[in-house]
Image (cartoon, rainbow, N blue to C red; front, side):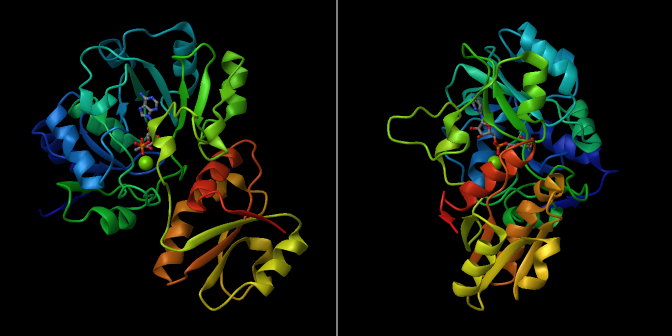
Length: 334
Ligand code: TXA
Ligand code: MG
């Protein structure tokens, strides 16, 4: 299949493709998504094929108007309304009991549906001109999520109908996912809206244990995505936890020409092969750059990446959650 490259003035063409049951990569404020008409099960099935995604991993439904929510969910609770009012449009996904209109392909057989109202103007216009849109990140299953058109082309050229170029994505990691379908609201995936912000708005929010740990035997995956390998570049990623000095010494003793260090701007002169994540304390920049850096390491032919263990606070929690998975939970104390 030939993949059309569209610009922001050609959203009508993309909307037509979606209405006819095709699939289109669209920019959002978090990462690029692979969009299909959320109410058309056959179209949604094409997303799973293009990504090589396991069919039991449900998709987020994206809306462009809060009025669309009534037909998609069985219940829009007061807590959900509070979160929606505060954080939508923006990088927050809320899991709610689903209505009967949601195709099985979207919910993967669960009784719930994940809803997100993105703030990106192109995503907004595309949804408004077509339909509520089911969209996972527009990467091949397992790879780092795409934050530029170049990343989308690398994974999806020839596999999808079109890509809309919207430049670089602002946040850089996927939306925060919270479920309101359990006794206590539970964070399933940290993202641009922080745990601290959620708690300030609705009080108690639990953190699902899988956010910072590998799912142990017998542990339930509240979000099916938790159990799959994720965000992995081809290179092996290893996290180093400890002092700055320990970090530098470990790398000096355990590197070769094919090893790169994912480091902070301030320390780059200590290393021969490095990729800069951002300034040390700029966690917003770390989130923005993380997936680009992981892909860059592969493009530059590195086979191993050493990285710092992030702080588990604010948006740092999202960076930590993604890089832990990229590293397959391989953390060395230094
Ligand atoms: O920022 C984002 O959320 C991006 C952009 C494109 O909007 N989308 C995205 O979708 O990251 P995806 O499919 O890559 O990740 C969705 C995550 C998966 O881990 C999935 O298991 C979980 O949300 N999820 C979807 N529906 C769910 C549900 N009903 N219950 C629990 N988890 C759900
Ligand atoms: Mg994804």
